[in-house]
Image (tube, rainbow over all chains, first blue to last red; front, side, top):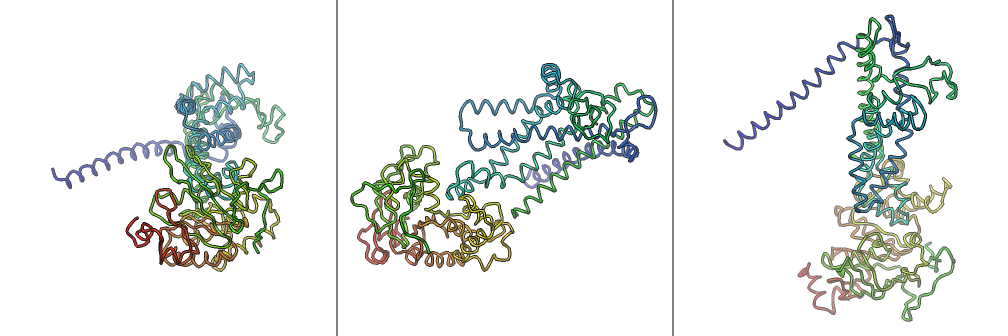
Length: 294
Length: 276
């Protein structure tokens, strides 16, 4: 067989593989959208669910998903930036550091249900926070941190060494060089990583079932005092997210239109995650452009 | 414009530590005595004693790997940050031993500026690139920063080209402009010495010419040490030349003498292109 023939065969093979991937993905997205999008309406995404009758929505669940995401980012981003800076700039090649890196990799591949059960034992029971947004946010932070740390470490690592030397040559200390030169240069990568990790957190269910809980108390969207128990912001109330809601109504939903609601919620979830992905690209590109990298 | 007076290098005592070297020449702002630099067991710079007269350009020439860049980087102690690098001997700047434990490393690097082979603009605006140093040393006033940026971009012969785009990213400039920006950034700290590590070797001929003209301008105010691989460049812009080979200085003297009538055969061979 000639080299040209081999090349043609390999190219054809690659096209087939790509074709299979695209078919699976398009089929899956198409199925969810075809079934789900007709269910979406303003009423659906704003009103609370109904337990026994038709016409319920997913308003509180949608709010819970975003609120939990914001709390998770508030907890995990500062820790991840600190850890990323340490690993990229300060850590020497030492067996303890190598152990830490292996641990982070193990943590990033930990099944999320295991993270959820750990959260149940530690945050819900031991800390006594109960099924609450706070327990859920901490469990999601445990789930989210390894990925974030690696993305941030990589972004910082990708800033050329010459930038550090240029900072030192101006008399900047190591810390000043990191904060005024390296972090701004690494920012597009860091922001992209955070938004992509957000998409993963947003769709997470297993880690939340035993931490943020599977119910939402009656909340009053006119009451924004975080200390009041009926406020949507109250950190110690249970908070069922969109993903958990889908899982629940498929298992034990007794409303007559459970299947339709599940379809609508699934489409809404996927739209939100697609939104995160596109925003991350958009903001990443915007930051790169602003800094002038071609 | 540039004060040549002794400036205190120590921040704690505010007093100038006098060197104990008896043969210190005060006409030279910078001097090394028996400076050796080791990378692990390898001796990259071997007992180099050189002095650099005020407001002059000294070119360090020699084949690749001869230690001239390492020597340059040890002057503002950039090698401190390299693991396994060890330095022996002394460097005197304005009579102060730069290896003394009382010396403030940040102050050294402020007064001895450095420009690298490849332009390294920060991922910031042109304005912020130049203002980064002065802001680090406490200049907060906007008008004052504006003045510093303009003054130093003018000194670096870049002002006319960028005055309308000061707040766009420095990464959009061409390589030659970026290198002049890096020079402006170093000048903004009001150094008295500039260390240039092959500043034009990554640039096109037009940019190279601009950098060379700039260097000739700058030597009125600054003491310049430049590493170069380009013999014509060394001949054009330098007042003194030091020829490095295998970590040692083989010959050091006025440029004209070294180029027309070198004392060592080896120097003649290198200049005529037979080593390197």
